[in-house]
Image (cartoon, rainbow, N blue to C red; front, side, top):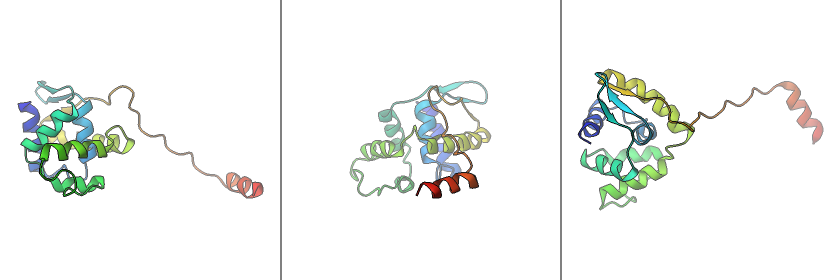
Length: 143
């Protein structure tokens, strides 16, 4: 847990959590994290462990606004409970979280941390097929 605490402090001090909170949660919950020297820091944590880590590292509670939440309404007197609620709102298995995690993993490398590959069963959202003029004409005919 000390390694994760150091990682969170490095992320906070570098200011890279803003705009990547979903991705940060995704990485900490479901990915393997190691140092560039090869020491394994984590293979994933529970929501409860993560909320406790965020509370202890005094992460800025205003970051939950990017999840569409008001930090003053998420258990304002219990910081661990507030973070637990925020993790639930983050939808850490969503394609948005995966995209943010991919970007954040590249940002963590210069800080001395390597993030493992996407966990099994999590796939990015497929790109919608390009619309052609024939499709638009077919829809007009149906109407």
